[in-house]
Image (tube, rainbow, N blue to C red; front, top):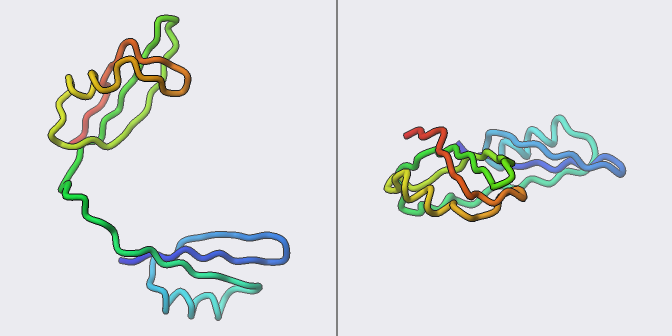
Length: 108
């Protein structure tokens, strides 16, 4: 299903929200329900990058002082744990240099 972004301007304030519909349906909704000015933005077709599926990875990194940072990302399903750890080792995220990398979650 397509999705549109509506930007509604009332006086000096602008509000934005998404609608789960196409442009024509959103235009009808806005004309019937919104005051002020509005703009409707519709996303272009999504691009297939050739990756059928990925793996949700959650990692925690620790520096020499003991500071930690945890974050999640989507990795190619062809990567294994050692490749992910090697790629993140000695990189800095949120002012924490990952001298030690721990994978705390892998969801296929």
